[in-house]
Image (cartoon, rainbow, N blue to C red):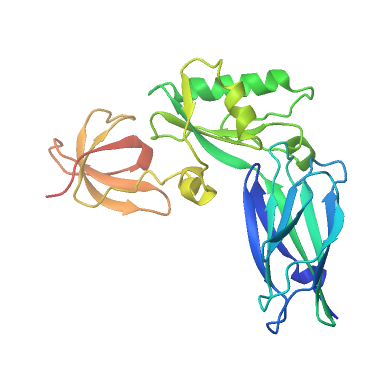
Length: 287
């Protein structure tokens, strides 16, 4: 008997309503004679995940609520079966399902386990251009009003939740990136409920089809240095401080301190002036 230990369990993260399939081999090109199945929910009162196993045209599923079973696929030289797990739309954050299989082929029995855990979705919500912050604040107010717990929401664009708080809400955070017009990003569990609860929000339009990967928006989560895009020799305008409104040429850039040393163009004697990156606006690149 070959046993897959807990350290070797294949665990997948799935958003509500999504699925993942594994192709499983009995090994040594042996035909599968029977498959015993045991489905374990964690916690036990979690919404039921859909489990479906197919092999050579025969299948087993838990659609009627059964959590254990056995089936005998057609005996062929094929030694593969497919396990498909579907996360329920009502799943809570970190709900988990584990499927234990005991696959018999001739006199051999191979035991293995596969797991999936519910994780949040990130979707893009279209808004009227220029109204992104208003929509984000409205979302904040809607979900804060529905909460039975005080201090669950900490910020519109940088919310932080404990694990238990995450399980109580449909929306965990709203990101309103600077420089992105007409969109805000919403993180939550059930995208259907998120769509339903945003229908009454003015200036919000519709959700973009599909989900957004966190890797696609992570650059919005780290503030850009104000000196990025500025090079020595560029012409800038000072936008605050005693020289506000003056034009200057960039003489030196300190990226670590995010400071720029400039020389005022209209000064009779060119004197270097060091200012912060937020104090200048690029108006002309060096030719």
